Image 1: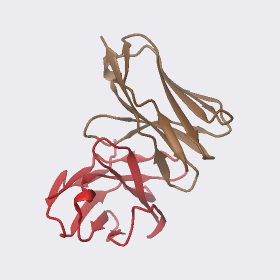
Image 2: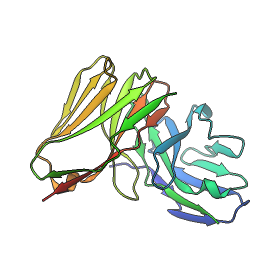
Image 3: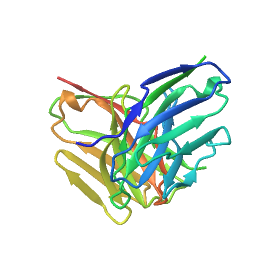
Image 4: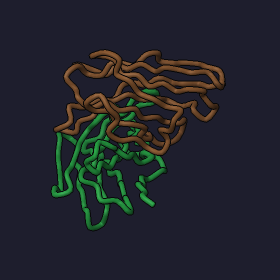
Length: 113
Length: 111
């Protein structure tokens, strides 16, 4: 069964550094998302992306964050100047759209030290 | 403010019994309500979706009800098995591609 893949599975970075989290969504999907989950807390929406542009974003997704679909297969989340509170599991997800069935990857655990 | 509440206490049930999980929401008018399963260290896995004009949905041993008057959804797992042990997440979708999750309820099925 096709799946959303995320790399790396664990990323450690120092405060103030930039990180790029990578995702390969399911190939025929049109909608792409990033969510995050701080340890012990709920899954939080960050951003949705459709037709090569952001369709919706949350208040968490400020100027520190950006997303890109650099080619036909990858979808990336860039976090500039990371802060300690950015430490979380970041999930990429994708969907075809119509059926609203969202497929999640297994996440990248980001640790900011 | 908008709120989605799930029973934060873990739910322990005996194998073979029916597990019932509750999701209540306030200040929301969702177009869809979804249920996901999440295992430790893994991403959420979609289970079922129910639309605002549907009362009930079933899939194998799973059943979801949606009462927009009470602002509540119930999620049932019949004939529960130890493999059903996981955290179950309720999520609301207003139809604009932004899904908002509850905190989840941890289910433990005891053999």
